[in-house]
Image 1 (cartoon, one colour):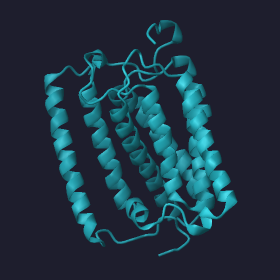
Image 2 (tube, rainbow, N blue to C red; image 1 turned 180 degrees about the vertical axis):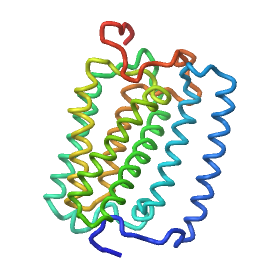
Image 3 (tube, rainbow, N blue to C red; image 1 turned 90 degrees about the vertical axis):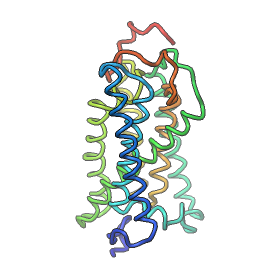
Image 4 (cartoon, rainbow, N blue to C red; image 1 turned 135 degrees about the horizontal axis):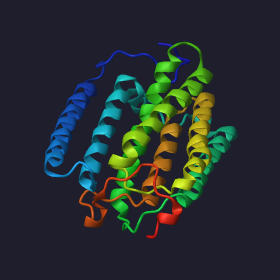
Length: 266
């Protein structure tokens, strides 16, 4: 194993918990998939509803965790400290970590919030926190899986950071525009603010998180950043709970959102 890699190459199923994890994840995928197929047969395809949104999200989360395991992310997180003793005593590490947190809080708590409208959906705190944390963990580990594949080419952490930004960021953006923002997330975007969200929230989050990872090799901070960002997003859009209020069951929406002039509800 190369000690310079954040996620060293390892043998799959080398630890007892891995078999249990993979079997459990596959069972969850089957249950969620069958449940979604059942609802799809009973409900119109062009209707957004919270139950199918949670089932689709669950399929995504579970798939991300399986990819994370196969790429060595999950085993590394299980065996590594959240922060090393050297990092905890390093003022530069603390400054960089606090700066990253501030960038994310500003990007999503201020910029992203101003471009988001909950359309009158009530806020259910516990489901929002559960969804946001799972979303952040899954997305963070998926992006780290891209990092893991790239760093094994031997070009170093800078190439891994740039490659993850270009490849992971592009795939994530495509996934959101073509599926997630219409089939999972409820309508929330204000059309005129989408570019500002990308430039002042999404890009800074990914760039600063990847730079932090490249410098300090601390994957926990990267995952923490994605959990923070996506939990704030889930909170701001008032993501509906699984049981969902009937008002959340509406015609399928445009993932880019509506122009500000057409939005009348708070």
